[in-house]
Image (cartoon, rainbow, N blue to C red; front, side, top):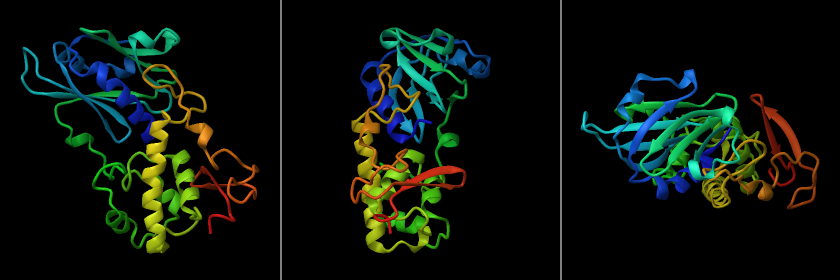
Length: 270
């Protein structure tokens, strides 16, 4: 499933080409996505493209019939892709679920497994994530300490909780804990000040580095131009069971926490 870096990559790529475009028509090809609200979209200008947790959010102006703004949200789920028309030649047209025809090109929503969704909202309030975005200014060391204080949950599952931090998934939590030198089985509330300091720094560093490399692709993820990410080349532990640790050369181990695979080095992550 696309995590924060993959969604942020798509948003940053779409921003220059889509901002200022006007929606001419909306075509829903998947009955699961059908909504009467699509009739409210034509005539509206795309004011901004942002990321809301793991969702791509299009802020739309009013139109001739309604002066109130709307927001169009795409959640990519497992295999969703938002591709501009000029980059769609290599896509399988059987997986095209929705099409936004714009006055300059079009935006296409592909989804092989049809788990993705789109929402049309007249307020973002109901869609705001419960957790804090780890790339926002609100995510300070003090805030991390407040969130984690007293928690008896293991730190790896804690980092996956979307009601605490938004956008972290299985790949990046394993990498973040390795870079922080923290055993994924530690109780979250047991982390000391220096460990929380490292954890905060590595969360931001790993996410920004992944964004710089357009995310991670193992099978399905493609950016808005139909290209795969390259962060998988920089992974230290994820998916590397039995391979040598890049720090100490000991074997990378795999355990299961809450039905999710965790990869770590028991020598480096005390």
